[in-house]
Length: 136
Image (cartoon, rainbow, N blue to C red; front, side, top):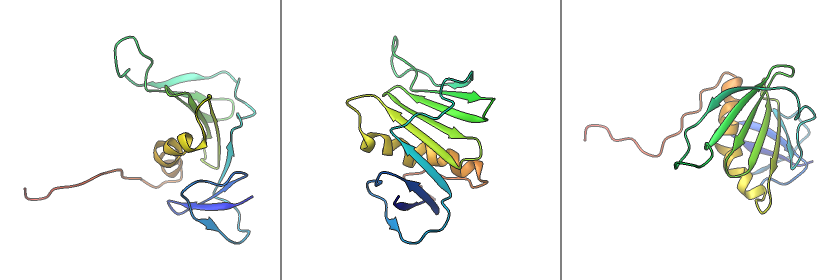
């Protein structure tokens, strides 16, 4: 299994992760990724944590977030057809996606909000910004 580096985290995945550097060595991973596979508890009862607004009337919310109290874990369902299931400690992440989506599509979410959540669960605050203007 190749390991990759992102945001200071060693990610272990059975699949190569496009765009991320490969790490040598056999250190324990910070996060185990299970790509293209649902979590073993995917059908466990859950409760809604957050429902985002829809982008247009009559469309689905952009993202639905659910807590899975029995695990504990968080499920993120994106309107595009991608689901992430994340253990509350951030040490394991499962990702599934609907056809015709691919791993490349899932990487957009993994490298943004999903790993942002993982970092927050580990006590780090990930800041996302494009630009800042000071004094005009």
